[in-house]
Length: 133
Image 1: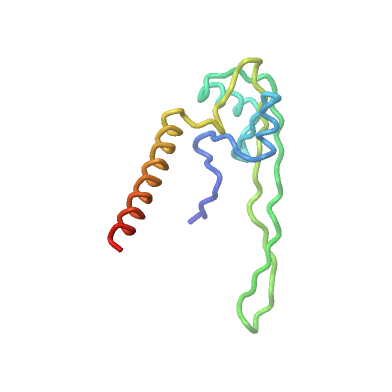
Image 2 (image 1 turned 60 degrees about the horizontal axis):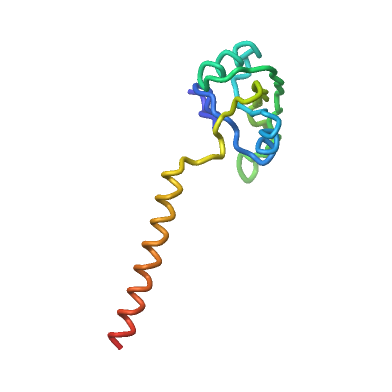
């Protein structure tokens, strides 16, 4: 039985990191993809899923990190490697965007309202505690 990885391979999901946030100013987005996918396949998937036009793709394979392990107190220690990852940097046509860091406005307003409610209930609890003394 194969181990599950953190990479979502069935669906393209942009990577939300500091480096990719800087790259968005150049209309470039990063995706974790299968190691066997070609640039043409990646471009078709991005265009189909997000409804944008791809102008350029750069891919790289990051080697898995070396990790140490031990098989017990008297056994010899060993090293193994984590799984390699393929990252695709996709540049879009001028004017196209993919929402990665933006939240919908209604989610933001709901969070603000919830914070206000918590503050008011805390104040009411403090006032009630003072009156009981």
